[in-house]
Length: 494
Ligand code: NAD
Image (tube, rainbow, N blue to C red; front, side, top):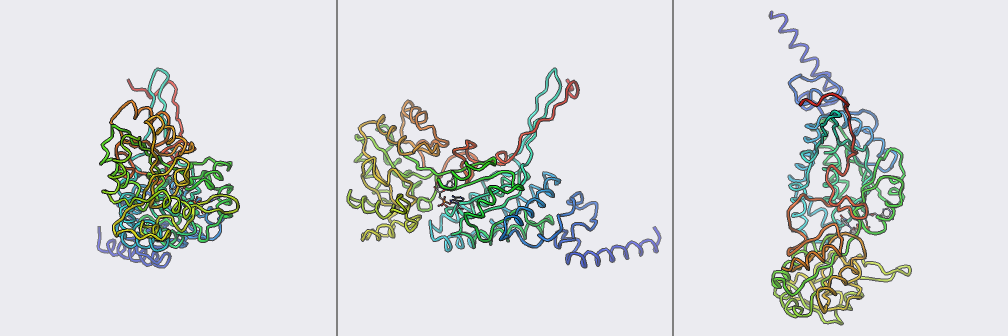
């Protein structure tokens, strides 16, 4: 190569760099830095050399924040068109970026969510974020299957749906958004999220951070879109939008029913009211400790958390005493009635959960009935009958009713009734395998915890437990379409 050629090469590089800066305001070393940057040819050795240009157009630079469902859906659709052309490695990079944003800001994000929603416990907000980034599965969960035989070779692959309309609860703003985004994007989809209005500032903040970080990494915006002013109307517009291919809804009965009634494919993570049964064979001290551990996690905000206990008479008093040793404060029957009356109030002729009690510390809840409890009290508890309002309804706060049962059969039957067929979660403390088996069969719930708390156990984590629609804890595969590629007569190589 001559000196003149070298000079030409150098000049070409310099001109290209200047053009890049002019078009996108970024440097070629950070290909996603501006709207036009990804369209500029990049070196063949770059890891993103094969990436198609990110969708340009009016939605770049919105960082996923929209006040119109049509615009959000259009931006998410354009982003998905780009995403589906990418390699799995690029999806994995995006998933890692989503995790890294949360990992680098756990304190800030946990505090922001806690301060905005004013529910739950700050230490558990941090815990939940750590759990999400470490235990929610991404692209590694994807797989293909094959059938090989005399007729040839069939390959089964899992394709993205497209844009997924996503509804998230106030109880876990970032955890649910993060879990949904990780799994849906790993599977090749993009999201339009209608978050709960009571956590909207946090939802917008994390969406902007994610989109900016993803853009910096791979040059695309709007993989995760969020409604700036979420309402029932924006939810309805998402449910019916032609560019939204499927729904994933996480919340209570109202939104679960609305999604079930929609004409789209819906993954519905609905409400629960998880009962606990304790029989005479259980390790009673451990049962009390585990019930309190699960029921106090984030002040009982979790849909899986222990909400009411059915204990057989022979160990009832022992369990009540043990609850006190593990941070419970025992209430009289009248006090339990008073707490129940604070938790559930009449609204338009219906009994509804009083939002003022949700996720509150035990001291605050006790204060609402004029009671002062020692610092460090984790939860209020007391004996009630099986029809008590706190037994029959999902309270999501720091009180747990305990019902005395004549035997394990009665306990299981009352537990079944109190779960109302949600098919969500139940818990049993027992060393008798026949009783455990009966509980599992009678309850027929998606999750059945045995001899432990609902915030522990093996298996991948999800913040959307799809109950009426039956997918269980969601994974990336939940958000895929099964496609078969069938070769007849060839490609079987044995
Ligand atoms: P919520 O039902 O009040 O709200 C959930 C979401 O649905 C919010 O974004 C809300 O704005 C929206 N919404 C409510 N009614 C709607 C309707 N008719 N149409 C469209 N959107 C509607 O619930 P929450 O207080 O935020 O969360 C707690 C509830 O969610 C509990 O019942 C809990 O069991 C359930 N939950 C279930 C899971 C699960 O994985 N199954 C996970 C978390 C929470």
